[in-house]
Amino acid sequence: MKGCSYFKEQIKGDWQRRLALADIFDELQEDIKEQRIHDLWKAWGNWIIGGAILIVIGAACVPAWKYYHHSVKTSESAQYTSAVHLAGLGKTEEAQAIFTKLISSGKTGYAKLASLQSAAVSLQNAKTKGSTELTKALQTYQDLNLNEASDLSFSGLSKILAAYAGIESQESATLINQFTPLASEGNPWQGLSLELQGIYALQKGDKSKTAESFNAILNARHISPQNTARALLMMASLGIAPEIQREPQSKE
Image (tube, rainbow, N blue to C red; front, side, top):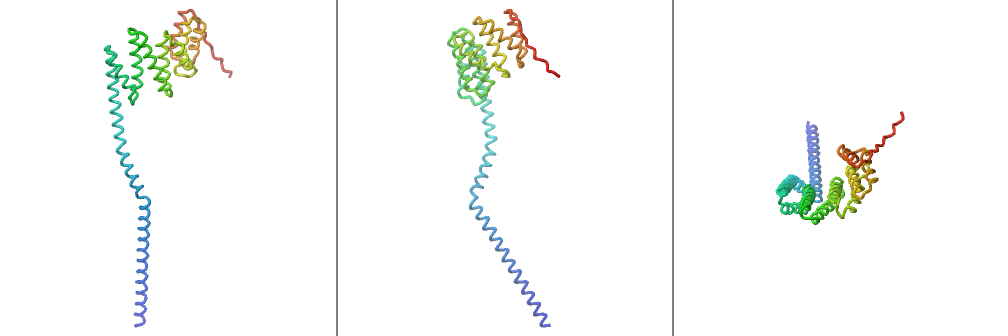
């Protein structure tokens, strides 16, 4: 019996030692994990904190930026509307002052609209104040063309409006060189450009070139019905016979 008790005590002691060793290993693993976490935090902690701060700042800035952009747009809209109203009342100097401010410091699309309206006011003034106002209008269109060179809609529009405005001015030769490239197939300003070419040719007495331009309108694929109707009326008044080219039928 003493022998059995001895072995039981030995086995019990052996298990206790094993459990103690297991606890030591567990503690060592925990210490290693903590050390790794400490090392990682030491190496990347500042970056993690910085990233968290940036996320918080970004989340706060988005609504702030939206509010700022909306407030700027609302302010410029009010200024533009006020200037248009003043121009309608004949207070052109006050209107031009507001338009000029929007053109120079505007941050939204109202700056472009202000350029167009400013030129329109100058053209209206040219009827009573002479060529100086016409020159201002043409310069405004030229500036818009240069500033919006990458935007075909505004760039092309500025060229077309300048050409119509200066059709009888000394700048006509320069203007025709600007809008002529717009007459290419597929260009959204093709119809108006061809129409202007016809009008300029008519002013110079070149009836052949006039007929060529108006016939080009009739045969172009992407021309508005209004543009085509004007071309037909002009040709009828000038006694020019329409020459419509029929597309060849495809062979089946």
